[in-house]
Every structure is written in C-alpha cells, then in structure tokens.
Image (cartoon, rainbow, N blue to C red; front, side):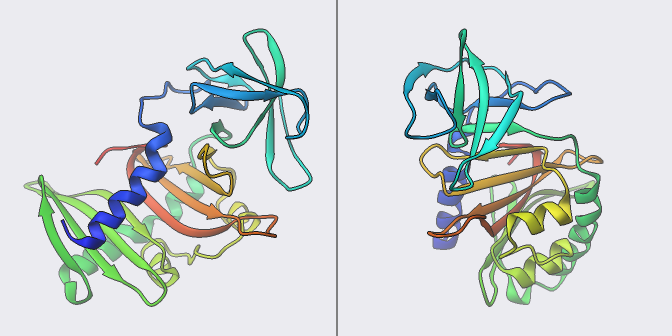
Length: 248
C-alpha cells in the first residue's frame, strides 16, 4: 500500500470509527438521535456547566423533540433516556434530520463523466488494484483526491470518492464545496439526511446526504477553528452505502 493510501485509510478509520457497527434504520418522520457511544453525559440544561451525570445509552434511536444551540453555536438535543430527561451535546451523536436528497442527486450527475475522463486519461492519476478494487489517486493544487471502482463484465461500479481540493471537487461534483461555510452548504444542498460529530472531536461536523435515486451518500466534512462560529468544509466524500456504512 502506498503512503498516500495509508494516510487515506487513517482518515477513513477516524471518520467511521464511531459508527463501525450496523445502525438500525431511523423512524421515517421526526428528528431522532442515535448514540455512537455506550455511555454519554446527560445534562440538566443545554449548558456544559450545568449539572450532569454519565448514563448508559441504549443502542436505538431516541426522539429529539427540540434542539438548540448554545452561546458557542454548538448543538444540544433534548431527550428522554431510561426515564431521565435532559440534554445531550452534539458530539457522540448521529442525528437523523431529513429524508433522501434530490438536490444532491442532481449535484452528482457530473461524477460518472468526470470519473470516466480520469480513467481514460490517467496522466495525473496513479492507480493500483487491491482485493479487486482499483484505487486512483492524485494531488491537486490545494489538496488530494482519490476514487475507488470495481471493474467487471457489466462495466464499472463506483465505490468511493474523496477530495480536499476545491478544483477537483468542482470537476467531479459540479460545485467547489471546499471552504464553504455550513450555512452555504445548507443553502446549496438543503437539509442533510444525517449529521454527526465524533465524540473526541467536537469541532468536526459530518453532514450526510443520502441520495434519493441510488444507494450512495455524499458526506460533507466540516471543521471549526478557534473563534469560528460555523465550520468550513475541508473534505467531501461520495460512497456506496448509507450514512456511516460505506460498502467498500
């Protein structure tokens, strides 16, 4: 495995470590939270300085009748767990927000064309095959990119795409999402199907848009730096499968 592939593998492990188990489908309607940790702190108020207790979390979707943002613009979810009412902070939670995305389905129409172009003219791409999956990699001017395909008798099956380069993002997806703020992303793409924040990384938000017309998900990864009220996009991913469960 190349050094770049190793780095990419580390990135993927970090992103999906909190969701390495199969999560049941959420209810169709309403806003629901799924704990990505076995225990979390439940707060009396949507405030990290309020009284709290660590409680065992059920491995099921929990109704979220309301959500608020604190003074630092972080999300809190009102829940009832094991008979206790309180507030959960955003980190360590996957939140079901909306339905399948038609807007993102339109956004990704460029992808197959751009991927074919890269495969047919791989001057700027390096490739290798591992366990039947062909991986293409390149460096852009402002970041990296990689995509995975399975080639067979029936054609090419798209498996995974990721980039941190805004030019490559625009070429493959039709929009240079890199460095966009969360309000800009929501304005362009609408309501995500899911959002989550890794437990150990409260500055990270992952907005996942499950496509309405195929079994694929677009994930937009945002990071908040010190002093930022909204995260900015530093990487996008398009993968076969549902949120957090890529079919590599």
